[in-house]
Image (cartoon, rainbow, N blue to C red; front, side, top):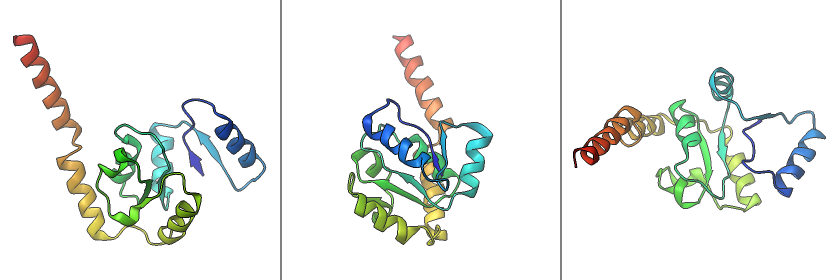
Length: 144
């Protein structure tokens, strides 16, 4: 199953969709949110984010909050999340991606990594803290 969609249609994304349509084992969900997304996360064995461009990788943080094992491209935004090195593959390198997927698909997520995920999400990516910090910045700006 491949969840999500290209932000902008490209020849590559069109070719990928056409190729997937030829194989009944491949399901392209398109963009999903809410309960359907939670169902995908709860049944996934590995979350893969092969992006070549990202800002803050929110989808990665969501997958981590569901305690999914992850594999992401080695672009700067993904590396800022500071995962274990074997959770990265060389961006654009299909062989590297396939090799790491094979390695990680059955590995799951060790308890030590689950603990790291929880700590990281609670300290660095806690939405309540981020909202409070954002409000403080606006209040300071309005005060003059």
